[in-house]
Length: 196
Image 1 (cartoon, rainbow, N blue to C red):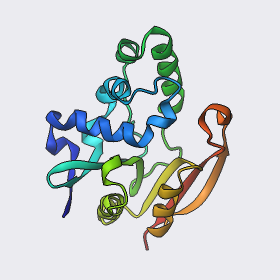
Image 2 (cartoon, rainbow, N blue to C red; image 1 turned 90 degrees about the vertical axis):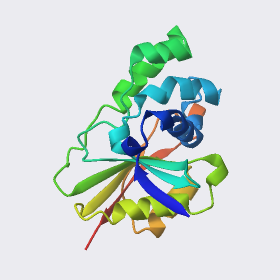
Image 3 (cartoon, one colour; image 1 turned 135 degrees about the vertical axis):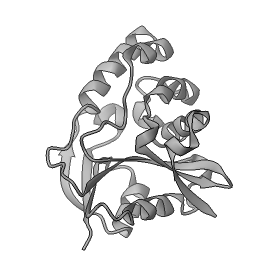
């Protein structure tokens, strides 16, 4: 059985497990900073505000995560000093600059009733078991939202794009990227679901 809970209700003792899932999902996109998942987990563990994340539990253990924001709160709140401590001076500074430009924006169309789903990830050992579907379906059933957006999904993340389409999300924006040579990503795709 898959249970969905708020990360804040799990508390700090599960922060490391959530960061491991984050790195399982997004580690390849951060490989310019380190290819070592333990080092990336060390670097990013502090940056996940637990009050914004939801967790899918399998057998009582975290198996998937998703941040849910109102489009104005940041779901990745890093500290440059922590990044440099774990990634080194050069790569930590580069990561700090990159994250400030990438993860510091808010949705220009944020409004009451709109939810931004961010950093959707499932642990490697739980993929293909419906964890993402259960987690997102739970969030899509929250009564206070009538519209959901997923911003900047990499075009090479076919499983995620397929899941979002299956849940009713549709592409509304596509943005060309310039880091294709090292990331393999050609576009970031943004999707939206309007509840009727």
